[in-house]
Image (cartoon, rainbow, N blue to C red):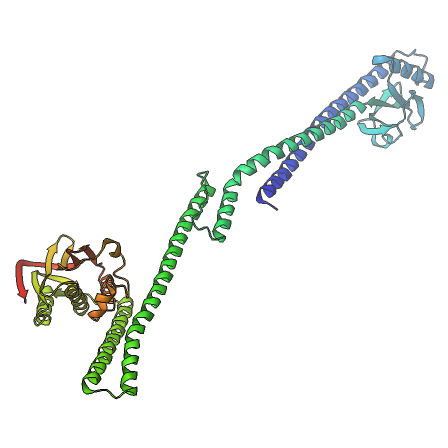
Amino acid sequence: MKFSIKLVLSTMIVLALALGFSGFYFVNYVFETSLDREVGQALDESSILSFAFETAALNVPLKYSVLPDTVVEEIASKLEMGGQGGGRLLRIADEEKNILYTSSGFAADEGLFPQTDQHTKSYRVIRVQGGYYVHTCVSIDALNRILYLETMKDVTEVFTERSLGFSLYRKVTVVMLLTGMVIMLFIASLLTKPIRLLTKATRKMAAGDYTYRARQISRDELGQLTGDFNRMANALEDTILQLEEEIEAREEFMGAFAHELKTPLTAIIGYADMLRSHKLDEEKSILSANYIYTEGKRLEAMAFRLLDIIVAGQEEADLQETPVGGLFAYLQEMFAEKKEADIRFAYEEAVVLMEANLIKTVLVNLIDNACKASETGGVIEVTGKTIDDGYRIAVRDYGIGIPEAELSKIVKAFYMVDKSRARSKNGAGLGLALCAEILKIHHSELLIESKEGEGSCFSFVLSTYEKIPSTENTTDEK
């Protein structure tokens, strides 16, 4: 059953109970008030009749010491005819409860006699022949006789009005319930509209449409729920997109990895088979062995690079306060014998937070890439400078540059802009991926500026521990 139907039915049940109890109480209250009024009038009339009877008995001639039964009948007849409309329903009994006079139509039994004495009045409401009456009984002290006067007052109209009241209220209740149901259906439809929109959104998302969002149409709790749902959907969509990108990157990685393995393995197997199956002269044997050695070293380098990337992505760096002078001295010494490029170092002294060995790996890879991208004898500038955000280290070359469309991809594993050029220089496209992972654990990132045909600049910023008075060191390595 729909929530809106449950809401309407529960409201209708509560409304029906409320109207039923209130209607019963109201109609019954009016009825009891009217009945009490009629009973009061009946008792007053009974008192008046008893007083009138006693007064009439006093006017009886003195020749009677005890009021005769015939006189009782005569007085009762006059009292009966004296009422409005020409008659009352009354009955008179003597001391022994023997009936002396009865009005025509007086049909009450003698049930009030035991309850009545000289000092009390009694009454009851009875139903006789389809009608309702107030039956009263009072004692009369008349001329040395104790008599009992009973009256019957017709109150059928009061009961009829109660029946009409209940009937009318039932009709009004039915009309109010039907009207209320229509109104509640409309209200329930408005109140549950956000729920319907959320349900539609969840079904859309379950079907794979992660871009669908529920429309927020209110600012109450359901509106807040819709907003929270949409924010959850945004987070879910971002996560799914991220997972899809990771899956795509993993597939690309596996494809590139398989391709990179295939090329050197093909060469190694081919030359090994040549050495195994043919008797070659010394020059060809040395050439074949050299090919096997070169491709084997390339496989070894690729394996170590992959291992470095995995380790860098999982470990926490132990960042220590390290002077940059030692870092640049290491680089100068390492590339002192490299004659293929003109490497120039210029840096400001500072103490930075870093893991020295990892940052050395980053810079060695960047300088090595710059050498590969430059022509023989090309200039490569390695600089270090204190800036507002920390200490910036940059490696600039004036070589072939990188196309703008490739800039966002070059830090991916196995990605190479110029594959033939990279392989000719023993590259596998893993150096920049390793650099990016190392800089992540230093809370930094690799910034790339490049223009095709004009060169590239790779830089990153490390946190400064403290500033040392500026002393610039400039060294050219040729």
